Length: 82
Picture 1 (cartoon, one colour):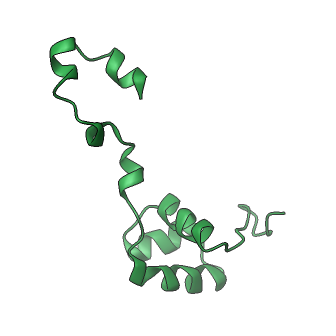
Picture 2 (picture 1 turned 135 degrees about the vertical axis):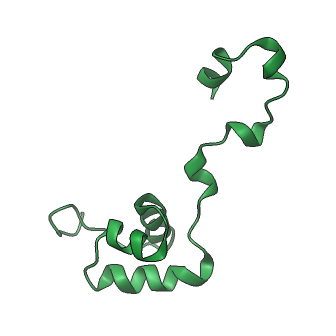
């Protein structure tokens, strides 16, 4: 995140905490009680975007939840990735 600090003045630099410099997507996580629903819908053939829209989360959040559980994902054409 040094690129972020390069564009900030020295005075403002001290005001920025490390939590402010995190990637916004890092804070977004699929709620634990929804992970089983994510897996179920994805295995039914729903796309990452459709599952995300249904649960009001980003598709990358859905993808991260699937990766954390070790669920193989499909490419955009529906084929399982090797």
